[in-house]
Amino acid sequence: MFEQLIHLDQHLFHIINHDWANPFFDSVMPWVCTPTNWIPLYVFIIVFCLWKFKKQGIIIIVFIALSAGFSDLTCDRIIKPLVHRERPCRDPITAKTDMLRVTCGSGYSFPSIHAADHFAMAVFMILIFCKKWRWIWLWGLLWAGIISISRIYVGVHYPIDVFCGTLYGSFVGWLMSKLFYWLQTKLPDWVPII
Image (cartoon, rainbow, N blue to C red; front, side):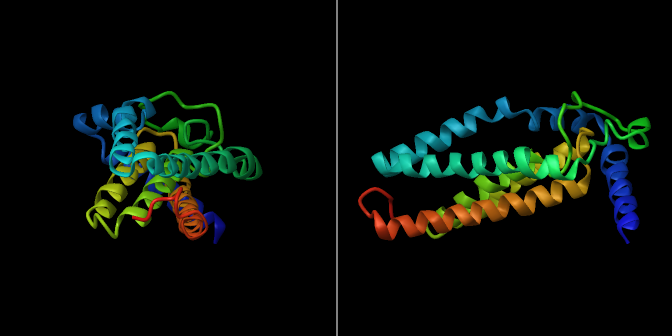
């Protein structure tokens, strides 16, 4: 069963990494998975939170950062060292046919920290903003999803790494939203009611 799952994972990786290959994705996907390219969006989120919620917006910004930070730290320091899964670009079998479009990276592959961090932030923002702005779920999932899939396309993660990173990040985002709402009841002057 486990071997079949790994075989399916490698097959899906080959489909996304090879069969989806085209000049448009070859230029866009490496750009999408580069964190510094998203700085304008992060600045927009910070400015929006401060503009809309004034001083209380700082709490939202802190929780967004906590969502990504907690997800990143636990994936990097706990899960990856426990699992020890090599990246496709370092795997002796997959690396032979891997179409690597960015540098391979030095760490392990499981789970994808890009997927976990972006889904943690997206799910947190969706859960706290969706009552007021229903459209946010679409843009949040689209943003985190494109970043996640790009990690497979560029050749540095298997689909299972991304899927599990997505699940874990979503859980962290949900957990942070619960903590945010709990703090609203305890510190209503500090935590904005959205």
